[in-house]
Length: 326
Ligand code: SF4
Image (tube, rainbow, N blue to C red; front, side):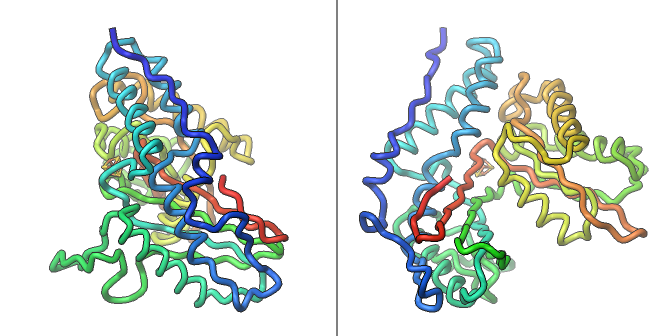
């Protein structure tokens, strides 16, 4: 009989005690021009790389407990839970691949995006030096690795998206997007005769099923799928990643899309692919889908596949400068 791991993460107090931020650190939002978020972003990365979000852990455990005890699917999911506990306890990366580092920054008027980008880049360099992150950024043709995770040609890695909003606080979300799961993402242009997909929700469904069947567990299933319906080739893929930031188990605000997400998740879990492709009922942990604009001549379905090691975290800086992580 398999040993069934009960996941109990280290307490929030222990996590806080390992913080790289000084005790009681607050951002001085009265001086946006002089704000330095380097250490706060470093702490965001430290937490993200070693600790999975609770909703992902809950979904993995639910999947494991729905598999037959002792089956390959059960044991694989149980090993994932064991992995989660080891990484959390030792503050070490959850996976050897710490991914492409993607940020979304939402900020009030007055914050310098150039300054925040410099600080984020510095935090990524420090995180790489301290081995929270593996140096994953290599030159496309030569494969040469600078060892710092900095884009050697431009400033495209780490990836940073900015959005100004009309709130006093700041939110910085980060996602560590593994290379294996990125490889099994897909973009479809509808109509697609090869899979019999037309320009409607049935066609979208066929695209999603086709992508998961083609992946066959590669990209380290059970996966979380981000799906953008519409957009252009760039905005569709960007949106398909952004929707993965939504917590598993939360409702899509659009009821029809929420129903679609639930239905397609159930359907994918009847394919028998299972965790890591070893068979079983847990092929995906969830599907998040969003409809976008499109040009009348184009209909894209962009699918980002996030692996079970779904590392994402949001740092929230409230109006009085206090920091929290969610
Ligand atoms: S796909 Fe995810 S779990 Fe698999 S090796 Fe890459 S980062 Fe790790």
